Length: 419
Image (cartoon, rainbow, N blue to C red; front, side, top):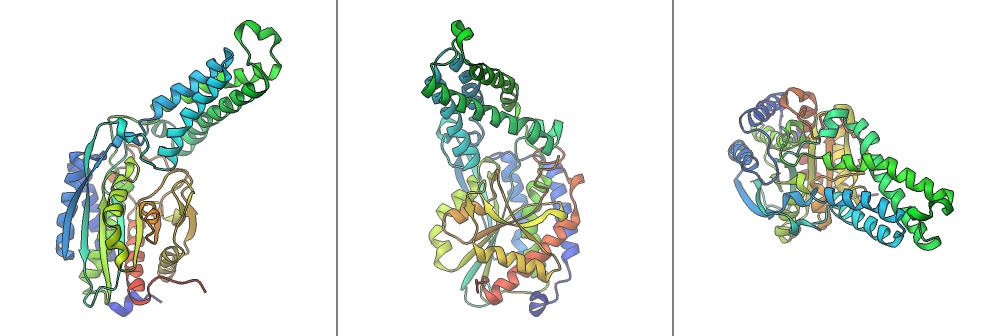
């Protein structure tokens, strides 16, 4: 049974879904793609601020500094190191080749997998922003729930557009990484058990040295294709990823307000973060700047990221490329709220990538991610196909309903606890 019914009669889920679709369409059509730290990102936040003003007690926009190309700017360097290592090893310099492979992997792992701000200082600065709306309870504020979605959109991934998400992963992305791994292993073997297969001694080289070299050559086209993994100038509409997440938060707050529901003891905060697609930079900046405030009273953060594929709706158990465990109570808050609304959600993991919730979890604030996205990924993921025409309102409606229930459950019961 829905706990929200004890607070009031929420009858505007569909109306707020229609409103959300209309506003997302308006942003995409009149503001356009919103690369991290761009004027368009800020324009979209100012647009959403006007939607939040009537339904919150306070709205504000905070700025922060980022280096947006730091997150993916390592790609040409990694590709050059990986390809060059194949030939350096062949010409009897296996230790140098091994070092080059390690240098190729370092920014790949630290930036793309772990979301560290490792090489950011090498790239130009930009100013990005976070939009924050706060709604106080009618009683004393004893706890807080934060709903965070990101307002920026990713630079286009042309390979995903050309092949589709799953084919791009299997035909290009995975082989490129496998090729670099093979070259690394080959270089390490040569370093310890041989001098390498130099061109002038190829006749005496062991067969497996020749084989590994040939295999390394075969994988070079896949590695080179990684340079074209991302456009460096063109960003995508980002209707589902992630204006839908922003408007699930806005829609839930709006539905509560229109039903005349005020939380008894829970402050509701909606954040439309900037520069998530540049490595969670907005969420990281906000979590660091407000850590003390967020820990002064019990706070839970729900990362809202892409609501389109209802059949894949899930709660994220692990995040940050599978390295970060989300809070048990936060996960079960969303799972239980969904169950009350008639949805049996699975726990899933983000094995490559992250959502904004990870930035808060890293700061020790109970968090989880919530999304409805094909993890394959789908062909609209980070491509121009992520447009308003490709939205699925039923996924947005279900998510608004679940977040309304989650807010009411949290206000009444707090986070679920293990038995």
